Amino acid sequence: MRYGTTVLNGPFKGLKYTRDGALTHYSTPALLGTYEMELHPWLERLRLNAYERILDIGAAEGYYAVGMAMRAKTPVDAYEPEPNCRRSCREMAELNGVSHLVRIHPWCDRRRLLRMAGVRCFIVSDCEGYEVSLFTPEVAHALAKSDLIIELHDGSHPPGTTRAIMESRLVSTHNLEIVGFKPRDWSTFPEFSFLSFLGKDANRAISEEGRGANQEWLIATPIKSA
Image 1: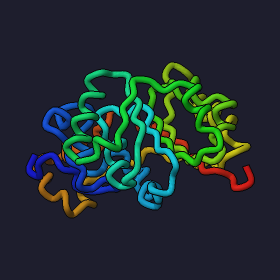
Image 2 (image 1 turned 30 degrees about the horizontal axis):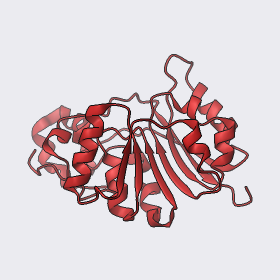
Image 3 (image 1 turned 60 degrees about the horizontal axis):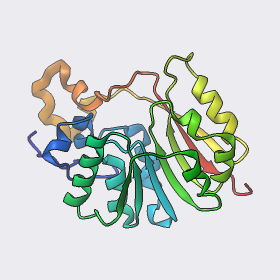
């Protein structure tokens, strides 16, 4: 890539990818800074260093875990069951000088989250449908002081099933907002003019994230009296 393996835009601008990391997952939109850009306005408003704990559940190669550690300068717990992804996350943390802040674990279960009761956490979750098993009503109550971004996955269930389940569990403790996938148009990004050589495929370079047009994220922020 013309600009190497450093993220160009977004809340983690300047994050460096390793060579191997740049060849895994959906690294092109990550490097361009358009990955999950629907969440950028919300992420950029956060004071990450104000949280007692930061958790990235489904950390993959480390985009969020390492990026948040760089911004917050505080520890981040990264949970990722896939060994190669854990290796990439560890290498990315070393490359960006935050290996002392990124604590990598293979698995997050309900017991770990229940131990966060009363703690102000920021949690990013992308665990391919496991969110329904992980964020039980009991866990939702324990996380009443925490901010969450949960990527929703219906899998084989009818569209909207996971959204309805998660909203029902969090509505008594959190303010809820649904954010949906937005189509990208590379021509609206002046800094991406170099993509013009791709022609009609230019939009794919900034939007190929392996998700459908109906992708949604649930953003949950604590109700102050909860």
